[in-house]
Length: 266
Image (cartoon, rainbow, N blue to C red; front, side, top):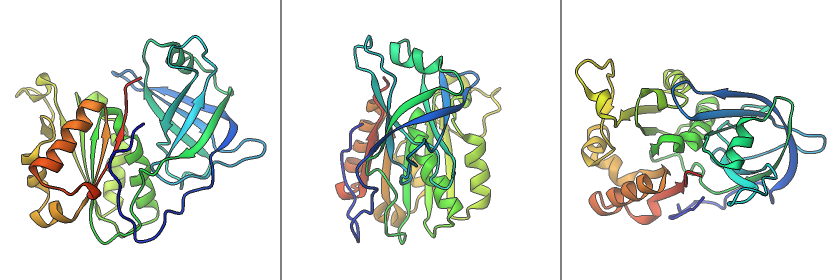
């Protein structure tokens, strides 16, 4: 994962101390119908450690796949909120690689080596201005953690999320996001899909269509909000680069108001 752009804080980040190594038990795994995405839930504690983290951080999973050309480990955002006391959730696209194939075949009860947490792609300390999340596909995972945390803690932070996916089936965590939007008066979520078939008159889709662009942003955000929000971008490299150019070049958002997290699609 790469971080390009930082946010000025009013006080130093109170991040957990150095990441710790632990073995966590796989509690459950779910294949999301109509997609290549799977979610995995782990028990948050092993015999000696409890995984404390901040919403938006990530952990390293080690499956020992020496035959994988990219090595035996991968970094995964912790999609669960710290308020979900006993569970660590990760979601990922399953590819035809030794690591991903072994991950998909893990049995419940398996102990998995995990090191974490790490990363500073987290909510700001200052809640006075809106944050805007721009998500592409599986890049929605840190936003699930942040939105769940903000809702459970009733943070006085206004959040707008634009969530772009190829089709309706690939809108990850939609039921949870919709339920949180009903509970959190400070939360607004705009879904958009990009496949041509989803845009036809016969489609039952009622949300936005097409890629996130300036026209879409100005439809939902006032000029003041565009000028005074902190923007978080998370998704595959092409999406991240397009959104960064949109914000920096077309809307003139200063670099210190843009935070990015890249999902490389491994």
